[in-house]
Image (tube, rainbow, N blue to C red):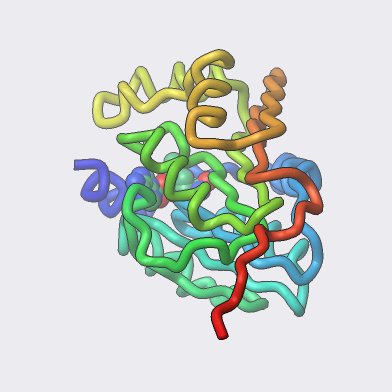
Length: 208
Ligand SMILES: C[S@@+](CC[C@H](N)C(=O)[O-])C[C@H]1O[C@@H](n2cnc3c(N)ncnc32)[C@H](O)[C@@H]1O
C-alpha cells in the first residue's frame, strides 16, 4: 500500500529522492499566488521539502496546514521545527477531516500523481477552498520526467500526471474555473480557481 511505501521511504527521503535544488523550489513558490497572511494547505507535504518556501510567502500572519497520509513523513517534517505557523495533519486527501471553505490556497507539490482517486481528491480540495481560492499542482521537473521516473518504480508505476486534456477535464469537472496548465522542460504547474478571483462569498441570509 502507498502509505506503507512512503512510511518506509521517510527516513532516507531527504538524502535520496527529495528535490535539492532550492533555486527551483523558490522559483516554483514565486509562481504560486500565495499572499502574506493567507491560509494554505500543503497536501502530501512529505518531509516538508516545500514547506519553508510556502511559509516564507504566508509570513507571520499566515498559517499552513501540512498534510500527509504517511505518519513517518510527517514525523520527519515536524522534527525540522520550521519557523512559522504550521500544523501537521495525517489524513488521506480523498477524505479530509477539515471544515470546508477555510483555505486561500491548496498546494500539491510533487504529490498529485500519487492520489489514487484524483477526481475525489480534487473534490475535497475544492470543498476546502474559500470562494476565490486556488489550487496549485506543481513539480520541479517536467511531466515526462516525473512520469518516466514513476513508471520505473513498481510501487508507483501507475501514479502519473495526466495529460493536459485529462487534467483540464478533471479540474473543470469538480467545478474549478480559470484552469491553466504550464508544462516546462523542468517544471509543471496546473492551477485553477474556485469561483472567480476576488469574488465575494455567496450571500447567506440570516434567520431572526
Ligand atoms: C513524492 S512524495 C512528495 C513529498 C514532498 N511534497 C516532497 O516533495 O518531498 C508524495 C507524498 O504524498 C503523500 N501522499 C500520497 N498519497 C496521499 C494521499 N492520498 N493523501 C495525502 N498524502 C498523500 C505521500 O505520503 C508522500 O509523502
